[in-house]
Structure formats: structure tokens, C-alpha cells
Image 1 (tube, rainbow, N blue to C red):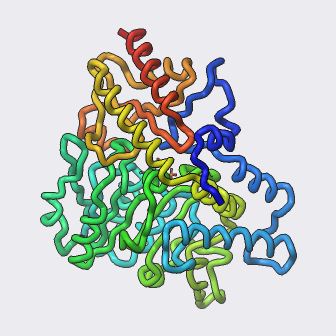
Image 2: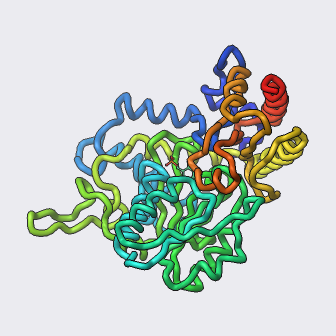
Length: 408
Ligand SMILES: Cc1ncc(COP(=O)(O)O)c(C=O)c1O
């Protein structure tokens, strides 16, 4: 089948893009927070809610069999999408946050000892800081930080010293939700593995923009959220190498994750169910299949070229604006831009922009340590998706200039 290489056709799948906000055509540029959903995803969710609804893995009746099949088909599609070796390595969660909490509690709970360390970077989302702090606190272990330089790049020159024998796991983002830079994860994984240290990659922002091959990356864990990948809210994935997942204890106990239960002893179900206790968001998880089909229906070259044009245009135009500081300098980046403007508070700018129909993110971006690094309390962020156009980028720049003028 021919791949789609037409932005209007891509946009036609997204009913949300047709709406007006504050009497202006919506220009949705908060995709880093959550992406809009294509009809295919909405239709599958509606179809399941309207009838194909039976709890998975439990009953022999027709509806249960159908939902189980849809759920498991989606797992297989995700396996292929990120090139995992086995279906059992794909665990459905409620999102990136839940995936990291699972690894921190289960892996950290088993392998961390007093005096050990967990290494994260200075540019992490709170979701990749706090779960590690919680487990470090209970184990009397330490959270170590790989700093970023003024341009937002990891201080790779400090990595060798930080990766000493106390480090039991490294957990870093492929792309920061503030800086938009593509981090040198391959080099980090190689160096960590040379010392026998496993690595978790937070792919919440990268999964939409970078073709992901977990086997090529050779990461031990890779996590992402479905809702940022055009899928339903409350869905996410934890990929883990089978060997390491097999060695980890369950995180949550409940239905579906057990083999046999007696009051004396319980044995657990094999992967992936060991980590999927209780009734999951099986409709959402099943609909991730449609989100992946949508992504795969688009011509990759077309996507890359559009994103490159947006990156070039945005970087050039943002930097021309007097008093504007763009955080995260470098060409190896995705179309996500965080900035501040002298004399204009990010929230005020975001509110004015909203009146012009432009949805942007403002605030501390769930990355307070990074805000502190740059000595700011908040930033403004524009993040693009496959359905955003160069015209929208131009509208953003024009509106931003007007908004800055209104505040000066
Ligand atoms: C890099 C990164 N990690 C983790 C998260 C948390 O994702 P979720 O809220 O979907 O669990 C986000 C969300 O913005 C993110 O950008």
C-alpha cells in the first residue's frame, strides 16, 4: 500500500484539528504533553466500548476472546514497531510514569543495596527522577546526576567518573521534554554495558520522532506513553529484555498475574502477565494498534523532511526575536522548542497565544531541576507532531511577536 505523503490527508484523520478555539482555528502545538487522536483510534475505542467489551484473558465467552485477541494483537504490533525480540518483552502499563515506577520498584527493590547509586541526567522529567528517589530513599542508595552543559548537551566527559561500581542502573531520556535534543544514548549504553550496568531509556518524547529499534540500541528497558503517540490516554509500554524482566519480582499483585494462589504461597504467571496485575486499560491498549498503524501509514521520508523544515524554520526565526533564549542548542533535535523571552512571563505569553488559537505549554515542564540549572522558573514550549504544518509554524512566530509586543 502506498504510504501517505500529503499533510492534508494526514490532518484529515484528526477531528480535533477542525475545531476553533477562542474563535480562531486551532493551532495545536502542545504535542509533547499529549497528541491528538486519529479517527482510527477513536473508532476502535468507540467500537469496543459499544459492544466488543469483555474482560481479557479470563473467560471463554466470545466477547472476552475478541478483546483478548485485540489486546494481544496490539502487543505484537508494538513488538514489531520497536523491534523487540519477543512479545513477552512488551508490558502494557498506564504510561511512561507507571513504566518507570515499575522498574524502579521491582528492579531497584531487588538489586539496590545501601550505598549503591542510580544515575539519571540533569534534564530528566520528574517521572524519571522521583521514582528513583523513592526507591533510593528506602534502600539508602544515592541518586547521581549526569549534568548538562549550557547548551543542554550531556556532559559526556564526566560519564566515566560517574559510572563507577556503585551504579546499579542508568535511567535517562532519549530526548528531553524541555530541550528537544537527541541524546547520545548509544554511546551511553555502550559505556554502561562495558561496566555491566543496565540502562533504561525514557522514550516518551522520542518514540514519536525517532524510529526506535530496541535491539539496535541494546537498551535494557525502553518506556513510552501511548497518548503521546496518537494513542489513547492511560496507555503505555515497558519494554525490557526478557532475561532481566524474568529476574525481577512482580510490582503489583492481583488478578491475572498469578499462576496459583494459596494462603501459604503464590506463584506468578510468566511474562508479560507477571507485570500486568488487575484489569488493565485493555481498550486503550488494543487501540494502540491503530495508533501504530497510523504512524506506519505515513511516508517516513515525508515525515523527516517536514520535521527538518520545521526545525530549520523555527530555530532560525526564534533566534531572530530580541530577548528570546532557546534552551537546547544543536542540530540533532526534534521539533520541540522551549524558550523564554526577556520581560515577558511564559504564562502571560501562553495565555495571549491561546486567545490567538495557539496551544502552547508553559510552566516548569515537570523538570524543576533543569529550570534551576538555567535559573528560570518557567518556560514556554512549542512541540510539533506529524499533522503540524510549516504554515502553523509561521503563524506561531507571527503571533508570538505580536504577543511579545503586547506585553512590552
Ligand atoms: C521525557 C518524559 N518522560 C516522562 C513523561 C511522563 O509521561 P506520562 O505522563 O505519559 O506518564 C513525559 C511526559 O511529558 C516526558 O516528556
